[in-house]
Length: 304
Image (tube, rainbow, N blue to C red):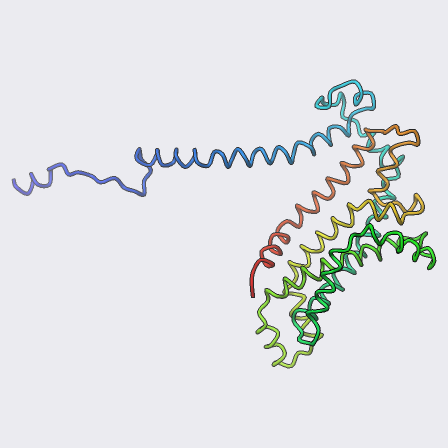
């Protein structure tokens, strides 16, 4: 009987911390309240970033009369692609995009090839005067581009390059090279020196160590810097407007100015359509390479 009474005696049960219960609810509510301002701030930032793009795309479907008679936040009456057709054909957007590609791709390629080679020589190799040369490259970042446009235009005119795309390619390459060398040198600084020393012991020469070890380990950094320079060159207007002497050589940023006639009247529908194509194309490119960009930024933040 004693054993039975002991077995049937009710025992106090302790709350299992692994199971959610009433005691855990105040903690969850408190954490939710603490996170609420952060979530509201993130939502506000998303709206600030997304709303202009949505407004731009919706405006690309409006007619000229809708821009002048209806509020800016009003939806288009009908979703017609006439503005896109006018921008692509009438505004010569296709030729402008092709010129931008023909200018941007070689410029970025020259910047990356020359920049990674110079950074390897300045950061990995040991030779007298490399710090001075690196400071000279960094000094190029502080030179305003507006100061050298007129001398460059005179030089290109005397050489006979004014009616080609080469002035844009050369200027973009030279002006973007200092920043590229500086960033590449920072990424090379994060790579342990023992990697290159082991390659030298194994018999690898300077060029082989650069091609087989340096370049593969800089892959994410190359994608990140290339995309940054790509956006910088693609969105430039000042240099393209200065060295573009003919309409058939105009880049996409210069071509957007052609949607205004000689009397100042702007065709807002085709203009919004052209800008939408430009912005959405760059957004898709960024989203496609987002992981490589984040990996490159994380690699550049490490210390060797």
